[in-house]
Length: 617
Ligand code: M6R
Image 1: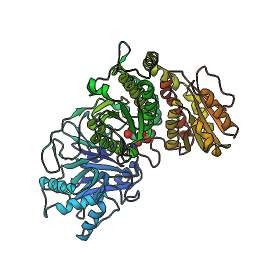
Image 2: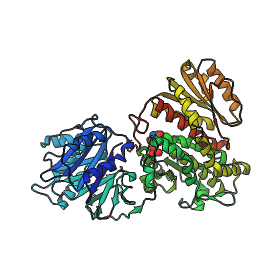
Image 3: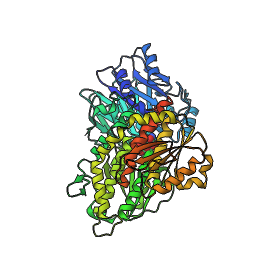
Image 4: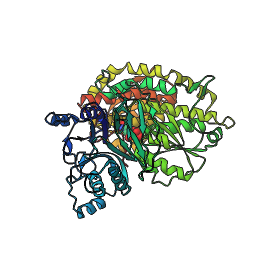
């Protein structure tokens, strides 16, 4: 989705803002632009396509300035073109604004502004903001306070979500910013101030950041940050220190972020476990803010997320039911909100999200709270909206994930869910749980050794890459499994489709003969997961049914298991406890998706039509 950066200070503002904007390229975009004050007006430079195109235009445009705002746009209102790219200006050309989010009442505001004489130059909802602010400015040369006042008045009329940054010719050493339902980060430097819609964009320069909250409005100079609400009442926001390693936001010699992040899987799991595996075979979750009574009182669990995070929840459901013998539901966040969920004070709603900014997941949390349910965020980004608003937070420790296709974050989510399941068992010692002590001990030991097991999975990279070469010729893929293997097939299929653009569908293996088997013919590849002893025999029968219809079969089996006769190829994965096999198997599936996409020449880190952080519903 869209990205915002900004800079105020002694460096070249345009170059700094654009360099930081490149750190947000992973979010997906189709045009880019920058604005900076010059002697006579606010200069706006935009280009369709990549930031490199914008830099090409800037080569021929003087751009010395100490203040700049920049933007990458992911088209919503109006196609991807230079005229729809941000920044957008008012009629006078004295202000320029960049915006992430959607102005829901833009059509009525636009009609009103057109009726009063404003001329629009784009199809975007954002341009409404520039004109609405202009309409509230006093005539003549407004001062900073008057500009701030006009922005606040305008924003009070806006419905929807926004992170905005605005510069004005009349306050050339300032940037005005505001946030509602779309993230905005202010980086504090020494005599310089940074602005971005995501933390990695400023990490190269500063670790001290202020995360604006909904309803915040701020005026920035290189030396000062003043924050108020939309009525001008001052609010206090304290800076936090970001502990992420800046190198994590670089490719570090890998061809793609996705490949680097797959290789970071073992470290991610190790970091997510750190400090949570206490001695005597117990799990501890320091910082997760529920009382022992609250923990023990949860009778029902609902796990909610989108995409990969939802798929982590599908694994979590099986695990929790097995461990707790309690009802557990999973829900896609965009459906949960409108499904009239039955929740009460004894329900724990677990919201899973890498970014902590996914609009649907936030809406689900906000729908759950008024019904009395407690909310727990399993989230990767400290200080994200989800982390701030949930009743409690369990942080995954994946570090920044840049590739649009989620990889290491999924492993971290599964690790966190496993820890949570085991912890919940401990919180109810007097209850007969579904899990035997042996199952619990096996899981605990399994978790302990998991990073080393994942390192071994990565050793098969070359073999998986060569298999991917031949699979890339197939037109369609089915991913089949039962139980945990079905849960993993959902995420494995998503990985392939989002980066290789091949049709890939996950199915419970037993369902194939109830319909989808009709699609199997030569040229269709079927990845069959056989990692669960309890269902392996039935899986093999299902794979034979596919073989009889001339599908190509790739069986995923555990080390030491017999290679199925019907398999055309095999991916062997290390053995682990049944509930941990999804984590183990996923590393190979991420590599497989990566190398198929590479063989097909796809743009792996920024797949078409997709964005890293989906901040609109
Ligand atoms: O930041 P979140 O985890 O809330 O994001 C949810 C989904 O948008 C995300 O997992 C998406 O499905 C990934 N691109 C999948 O690789």
